[in-house]
Length: 422
Image (cartoon, rainbow, N blue to C red; front, side, top):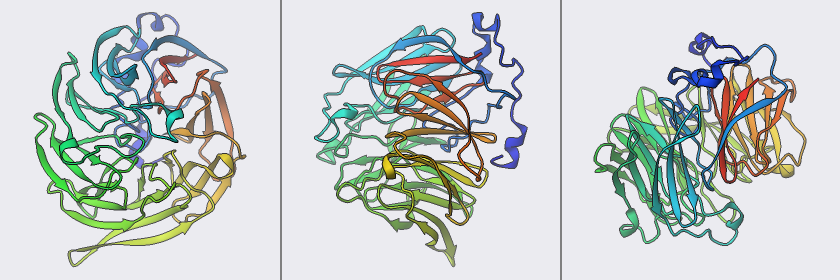
């Protein structure tokens, strides 16, 4: 189990045999799931409303499938609704769907004439950022780096901020991929290009800038909100370094240089566990770091570094005291790492794929491979032990999945589908 409070998870009262309840959609009631953004409520991939069954079903049932367009953004779930940000033609489209039926409630389009740079064409023109929903507002970042706020009930545009006047190009080379995060009355994101940018906090109601920190370029990683030594802060991996920034003031607290250079990109979002930050990037192994404060001065202690596995585009997840991830070495390997020591405990077979999106549940890790295969593996340090496998798409699946109590949402190349467990 992840922490003590996770042992009191909500029980699955409806069971796995959905029966007639599936016909009226009640098995997906509003209380069943809240998935506000990339990697869930705490941006750690932990699914706190899911309890694994005693026996995993042999197959899944597709409830509905809707054409929503391309892009890598995570679906969001709130109040019996699903929100999906994607691209159709020259437009980025934000849709609101009924969770039980897939019926469209509203749709908003925004012209975003973005074209992927050389080397990124196969990944499309985005959006690659996952939106976030909080207090009745959905916040999106376009491929061009525009930050927009939408009314979750009606779809009305509330405000939009575009930093292209400040930065000639308001996105990294292959488009903005960082996912915004909301903490209280502010939405936080890193804007700018590879050479210059800033971490910004905007008022969720008005879009007014509360603070702007630094001038470092943007990366493809997403910020975290954590508390370290009693200080609530943003952990942001920008183009130059991993930094800690006080959420209230925007004051820089500490940093650990780990720049993007040549083809070594800052892609994964760091993990936070037991006061430590686990940080890994393409061709750069994984670090176990701990920000410390003494006499009012911050520093970063490097507890360990290992180079046997490295994170490329896949963000790892914690389960217990283990880190489960996907190394790009040997053309893709699942792995398990001890968070205390950095020791790699096991590695799966090579040539597994290009990308894996992870979720963490009690005693298991859910892994969505980019080939549309969903694997459920035991969260054990002993070896790679697969307990279930499902083919949930026939086209590439790079967007993070969303696990409900009795089903899951899968975004493939062009569509969004709801699958139920039988």
